[in-house]
Amino acid sequence: MEAIIISVFVVGYLAITLEHNLKIDKLIPALVMMAICWALIALGLDHFTQWFDSGKHALLDNFGLLAHEEKMHLMEETLLHHLGKTAEILVFLLGAMTIVEIIDYFDGFSTIKNYVKTKSKKRILWIFAFLAFFLSAIIDNLTATIVLISILQKLINDRNVRIWYAGLIVIAANAGGAWSPIGDVTTTMLWIGNKVTTGHLFVYLFIPSLLCMLVPVFIASFLPAFRGELEGQDDSNDKPKNKFSSTMLYLGLGGIVSVPIFKTVTHLPPYVGMMLALGVVAIFAEIYSNTKFAMSFDTTGDADHQGHHSPVHHSLSKIEMPSILFFLGILMAVAALESLGILFGFAESLQENMPMLGTELHHEGVSDLVVLLLGVGSAVIDNVPLVAASLGMFSVPTDNELWHFIAYSAGTGGSMLIIGSAAGVVAMGMEKIDFFWYLKKIAWLALVGFLVGAVAFMFTRTIF
Image (cartoon, rainbow, N blue to C red; front, side, top):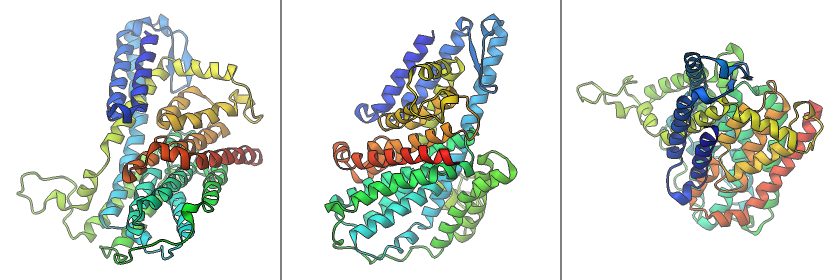
């Protein structure tokens, strides 16, 4: 039965990886894979000899001796445990996405465009690289990429020039997302899973992530694509369309940034702080839009207001639900493999067979090569299931350097292919970037940055 479950997972994983070839949205195989894996566990429960207790992070060797009712109870408890952990991530993401959409509703991001006054291609590259690096740490790398490419489309008319900037924005955004607990889905997973804390994440990863961005941008600044000045730059629409644009931008970003502080002070899960931030931002959004408070949608038309006039409802309607459902499917599917102890066994075999490249991780038995391969793997396949699997594979304590190295590798490794990260995929869609063009022109820059940052991490972990 375990072999069948693994086969279902592998087939589903391949369908996710080949999303663009199959022309099937990756959320579909993720949800089907999750449901089938848990159904097979329920049907073959009496045939399994071991079970992984996620709370204690240890195998229950006497699982095979338990009665059927006890096994069913344990399975239901485990399923509920994983659903709760997954829901924490999903509710957190929903809150962050809604705040970003509220900012966009008030045209808040046009404020950023007004800061770009130069026509020098090289200066614009550096401006957008730093914007992507720091903005992605606040509003996540996917959203930062969408925002900055949207601004680029208003600044630069020539698409052949623009795609070069888009490629470097992907590298910078992924690097910026790695050192912030709210900058990348995978880092958020590690943070919510109590594997890393905000302070240590910054101390360990800021310098490696910064180098991962700086080195490729520095090299690219000498390439022909970034010489000279822009032609035909349009300055006619510099003013924001809404008088509250800058206010909502700073309020929204401030709300998101306050979440790690809220968690540190209260020790409550991050999604609680994100809901508080969303509530505060939504209050001001409703006031500034001159509508009555309406958190529920009235379909009868008899009320004094209509829900769709509310900026909150408008923003909620633009949330990318396919991504939320994909995360639900893939995280719960990985949880199925973890519950059967398959991931735990796989981790042990990795620790036994992989050579040790570093000395700092010897006591965990995990080599640097394993984590570097995880980074390279995240460029080929989705980094979310890779990190989800690592959560079930390794049992090292909170803030161990292994978790920070995983956060760096999974977050920045995806830049090596255009389909290797959410930021890359969205850039590909917005600018119709060709896979092989990116592979030829940008991938080597991303690889250089990834390796320089990895070496920097190996050095910084010996200091702190």
